[in-house]
Amino acid sequence: DAMVIQNPRYQVTQFGKPVTLSCSQTLNHNVMYWYQQKSSQAPKLLFHYYDKDFNNEADTPDNFQSRRPNTSFCFLDIRSPGLGDAAMYLCATSRDYQGTYTDTQYFGPGTRLTVL
Amino acid sequence: AQSVAQPEDQVNVAEGNPLTVKCTYSVSGNPYLFWYVQYPNRGLQFLLKYITGDNLVKGSYGFEAEFNKSQTSFHLKKPSALVSDSALYFCAVRDATGGYQKVTFGIGTKLQVIP
Image 1 (spheres, one colour):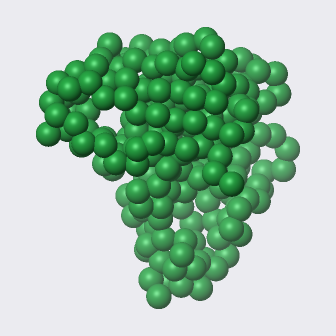
Image 2 (cartoon, chains in turn orange, green):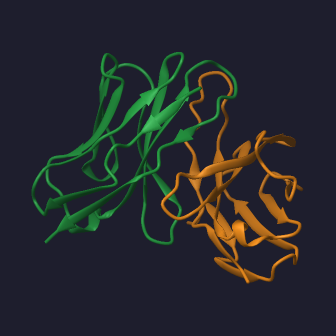
Image 3 (cartoon, helix red, strand yellow):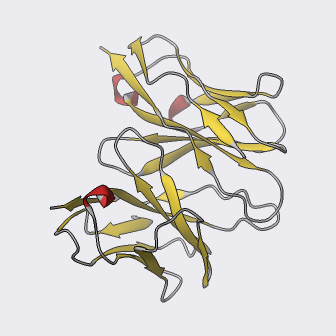
């Protein structure tokens, strides 16, 4: 019954070592989002895909990249993780945001990234 | 720019008592408003949303929220708190203007229900 799945749930990487986080969805939603959430902070939107169209937030560092090979999957790549990138990374989906859709977002359980 | 304020870092309430978690917002147009709940080491779960119409919105798990345009508020309420309601609650807003509008989340309010 899982709708938004994130793997792994916990990821440990070394400073500067590339890491990829995975998200998949069974909802067939058009939109997929990646958020970074640090302790006691609001989730911070990094970027989103509307179908195949990538939309980056202006303040997202170049160190963060994303891929969406198909409707179901989306990946977050951190090219050279720094200590400041340690956080919970949340994937979310929404059906749409065009027309009358109001983009209720459905979140995965998150991947907690530790950088050593 | 749109913003959300959750003025209380933590709310403590005794089990069985009514609870309120406060949220105020700022947006240039009309708002869409959301409440999400987050349990430890989990993602956010949608509780309810206000789009238009009745100012009192009912959601999951017995929660409701009241949209007050004049006070730009969208407080979350529940008549009788359960220990299992203890979690982190996020209010969120987006401008209702058509097309893509980013959703802005508040920093969250920790709800502690005391047995």
